[in-house]
Image 1 (spheres, rainbow, N blue to C red):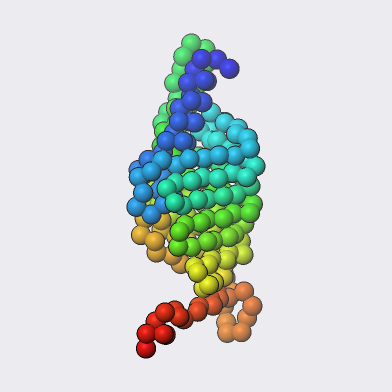
Image 2 (image 1 turned 180 degrees about the horizontal axis):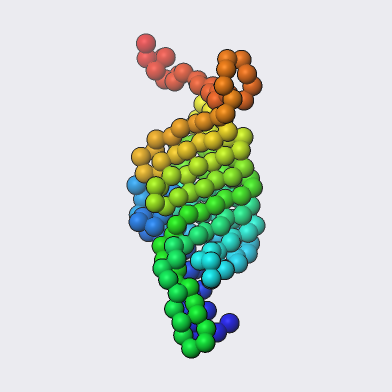
Length: 183
């Protein structure tokens, strides 16, 4: 690995590990860094991409995104030519793609799905594929859940329409037992 590639690799790794709120916000209203771990890491400098494989996890403050594979994509800021070699300059985090056994966990909720896409610009995470979201005993099911990480607002979607058809958005909610006892 030549000197310039080492510098570019270190820039990608530093950006991935030290991304601040302007670059990534997995936790609501957090300016904590995003800490990524996995069994192995592959860096593709020319694509501004790092691939975290094997029990991959992105943790920020008290929120966590886990999957079999996490792909972190960084913005391309241009290419530099040094001698006979050219390198791609990578900037802030653009998005994280999660594949296989996806879990997004916060202190308030637990969400499971097959795929997820976190987009830094819109601060949204979209979880797809037989999505199950739980908050306490309450459970919500659908095919696609979009969460605005900054505001906490979420929308569950499905393509199935019509009363009585399987696969529609479904929720089971339990009344708050403490409120019932106060009455």
